[in-house]
Length: 466
Image 1: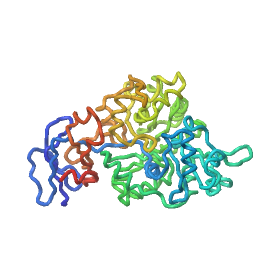
Image 2: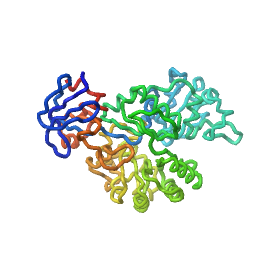
Image 3: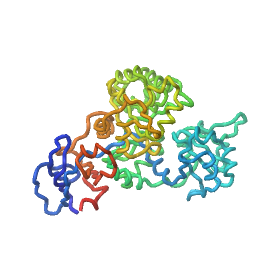
């Protein structure tokens, strides 16, 4: 194939008329009717399908997505099912049994003692569904050298013995495990098949940032990737950028306000905004207070913002703080959120439309693998807000699919900002649908994605363009 691609008869939004699109050298070179094909380029019929800027997922965990595919998912099992599965589990290539989808309410509390009863032969590590906690059995703790390790995240009993619970200790755990990190090639291909051309990796530790950068350099990840980890000196690459610094306000161990403000101030001094993980009402209030002490920087944002009353929404808007939310978590676990939430928090769960009404810039994302990576499912969830049982969680927080889509089209460094456009001179990071946009948005589905282009290259759907 040559360096030129001509897409004939594609629909451009919002004009809804059909044009031809010429892609050359990674950019949109020409838009118009009845364009002539180049001598060596590929010509493909658009058949009236919508041509959109590629979708952005503003909050994912790329290495965790890769590891998730090689793990035992117990999210659909009972406690007895979890016990049975661990008793029969076979170790992976690294010698470990790696488990994801653990839920303390469904499966009960776990520690090394409980895991040892179920499997005391193989090293086992179990990840909480939030990603904030690992539970490791005794063979696993011995293999990690946890007894003599100095990591603050290792929970210990009164005698100083590890309980098996590791709180936000991913960086230490990764180093202790050693071995080769998982390839991100499958993750990149899956995202491309969903029409995703841009992602923000929200994993906070520096080791993961380097891993993601290497995956971009090796072309395992074809997407444009913004890294939010505490990294320095990333290699220059046109599809790799450093974004806001991810800070975690952990609900089980809230930081001191001066410490949090100091970290914010240091990030701002390095000209990096902050992206603060906030789930509870208290965490959001602490974050706002710390930002007031540190001083704001354009681009500061809050991740999740799972509980925000109207007053807090107004405070976010007044400070020009963006919010990146996850509607599919309602579709996956909305009933659990409702049951577990304090009654005063229920009206304020997972706001979206309310934040927009207050003047906050908002973009939807997946939080994959802890949420569904499918952006089309996200559009449905944002507009329906249906829990697994069929409950509508916050009817007044529904947003039209067109609004949620605009957030997915916003730049990585400006979630919720003006949508990227299909225009001459713009990068050819595009998604071609198999039908007009209005029809596709009536029933959003990943099956509507016909082809995905990044820097003018076909990264998904080449066979569907012939």
